[in-house]
Length: 95
Image 1: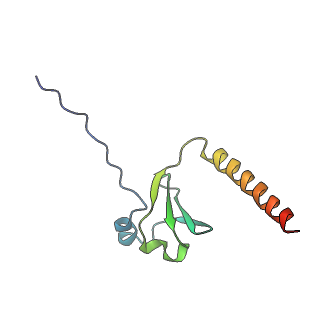
Image 2 (image 1 turned 90 degrees about the vertical axis):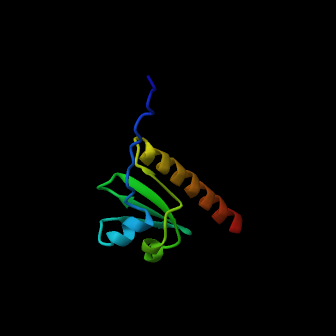
Image 3 (image 1 turned 60 degrees about the horizontal axis):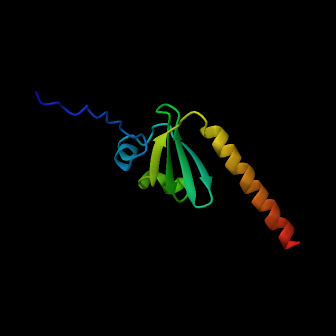
């Protein structure tokens, strides 16, 4: 008897361009950081990285999408602390 491959679970992203155009009023939060915007969907528990500022994010597809996973907040806070240290070092070097 032939074995069938397990069924793939397809999750529709709350952040892909087709979905954003079809549901422009869906709740998405935007957090611009330099030249990238973090787009979050609390309802879907997902995030996306989009190039550019939030104003144009609705017309652009994401570079990357994923689910918010346990520990991500801590990881992002660690990153923020390192960036704070780099900024402080740069400020000291300018004086």
